[in-house]
Amino acid sequence: MRFPRLFTFSGYETRDIKEYLSKGFVEIHLVRDRDTEAACSRCETALTNLSRGYRLRIEHMPTMGNRTFIIFVRQKGYCSNCKKYRSEKVEFISAHTPHKSKDFAWWIGRMCEIAPVSRVAELMEQGALSTWRMDLKRMKKMFQYYKIEHPKYISVDEVYVRKKKKEGETRSDLFFTVISDLTTRRVIWVSEGRSKEALDQFFILIGESGCKKITAVATDQFAGYRASVRQYCPKAKLVWDRFHIMKNFEEALDSDRRTLHHEQPKGSYAKRASAGKKRFIFLKKASKRTKDERENIEELVKINKDFFKLELIKEKALEMYNLKTAAEAKDVFDEIGSWIFTCGFKSLLKWHNEIEKNWEHIENYFKFRISTGLSEGINNVIKMLKRRAFGYRNMEYFRLKIMQVCGYLNSRYIPDPDYAETIIASS
Image 1 (spheres, one colour):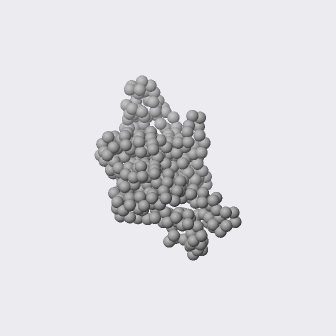
Image 2 (cartoon, rainbow, N blue to C red):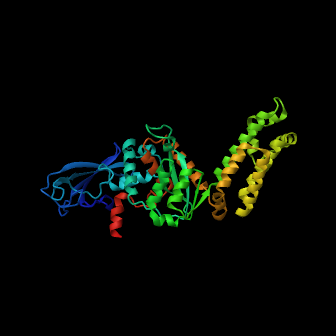
Image 3 (cartoon, rainbow, N blue to C red):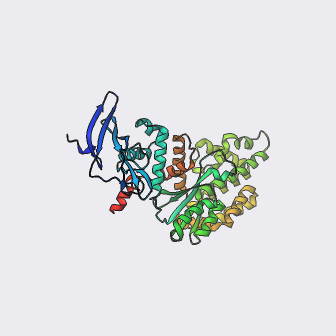
């Protein structure tokens, strides 16, 4: 009886197909070809003194909605290279698990790239833990073929990944350092921790030649990242992120607003207009305020000059990054500084002094016009992954999953590990 090509397997002949449709599965019975030489599953050396072997039942791709199992006898023999008895190599068995075929393991792995493991396991009627293990093994195997294209512009940011510290850990160990290529807009590396060493790991990985190709690095004001860039990429320009700079400005602005609020007489209009939810009005750009918010601010600045000065400083600072050149931005920054010093706003003065000491990193923004905005968006995807899985206990798995979903560690860019050796050999 001839069977369709769908049921042909390398080194074996299909002898029978049994249908158990009432139970929802199909069995494909194979017999080993006599002309096929048995090879060691570890080193592929020819086996001698073959035994009768043992019966295997592995799961294959579903057939017409029914689970499909392949049943055959796998022989054992003596390997002269390993100096022990080994099972023979079977081409269609997955490298990740001896209980699945290559095709079926590839399909499960492909589905795990786009859906939670628990949902894939439920759909394919598999155990959640065994599916998770298979996904982890697959990503580890794919990682062996992972290559980082040398980027020109990169973004470095951290993402909070877990709450509890282990013994001997610091708060920095609760983060991942995520490096993204601003040209391709994908994650190229993830390191555990938020430290200089975490970014050092990436620079060491790409080597000296890769570091020389990096022109600019967008990051926040964290000293560890700055030290790492200066050590490994001395010619690269460091760009302090616009979002973080303005966020620190808003925090300083709110701190000085809070100080003014406490200085107002109890029961006064200024006291009421600068408290509660109305405090958020001060952080808004004037053009984005509602009619009621504008009226509230206009009345407040009329009766209190300090709030008026704070409003002027805020509006001027919001214009700084919209200017065309670094020289124009510096003029505005210096003007803001003189106003802050004259008014005596302590928090804003501290912010201004810190930026003034490192103005070159702000100036670089106007040369390259890059920021960590991409990383902030990727962080939202990472948080979505975390929520979707109800958290991750295995940090290695979480790190690889980020690189799979947000980067290049997936079947679109890397051949599946079960077939990678064949593809590389043929090329």
